[in-house]
Image (cartoon, rainbow, N blue to C red; front, top):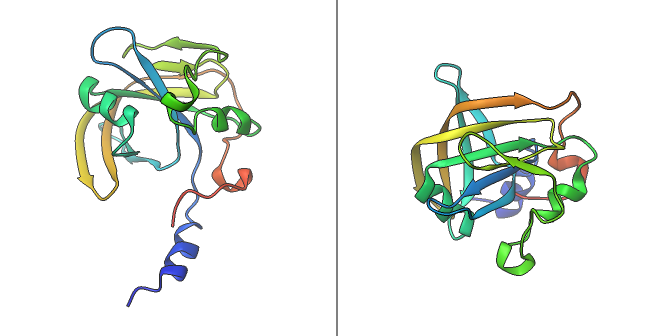
Length: 161
């Protein structure tokens, strides 16, 4: 039998880095971003990234429609930036209003202050539970600066369990 408290406790021990996932509308210039933590490399060749996205979010719909996303790797000390992208866009308005960003090759927003980024073309999706696992092939990447990655544990936040 599943011990729900034990499951929650142990699953929260899985280490996660924090990223800003930039997404774009299929048509027009609409962009959005959200703080992502359920991300990992899945293959060397071709280079694949998995990105788990909450199924009922606006960003999820944008990824499904456009077939692309970008991940900006946050640096230790950028907790406030991660926090800015946690809330849904309809509650906070333009999340990028006070953030320096540029549009990458995919048209997705990339955070200028981040350590670096990858841009991905979605090659597969697994829709199960309350998140979709998007598998993205890395089609562009860049390094802005050196530094340590911001991890979920260092923020005192929990997202998992």
